Image (tube, rainbow, N blue to C red):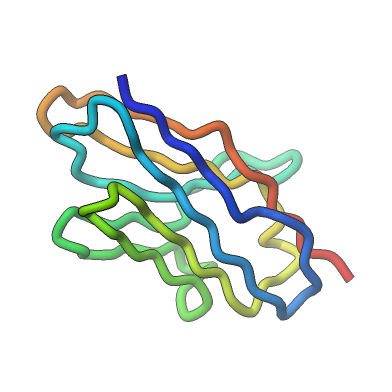
Amino acid sequence: QVQLVESGGGLVQPGGSLRLSCAASGSIFGIGLMGWYRQAPGKQRELVATITRGVITNYANSVKGRFTISRANAKNTVYLQMNSLKPEDTAIYYCNAQNTRSLSTYWGQGTQVTVSS
């Protein structure tokens, strides 16, 4: 089994910054794609950003230029640097990891990000 532990959420003012972390542990062999999703109140869960083991990145249009996903493969850790935060970024952010060998998908417990003036 794979466990994903998230941290870094909190309350910030518009224009502020947060850095989320997600550490994978357990049976981590075969983990390839990792990323972040979010779900705002009353909204559907959406993809925020993904990163491959070869550090190829992909971003939702709504966060391009503001968020940066990065990966420390040796530590099995993924980060999401969030700058210029907007109220519409308020959501629960979930870490995701995919095992390219078994096709299993794993999710973290979620961390709350609130952007409010």
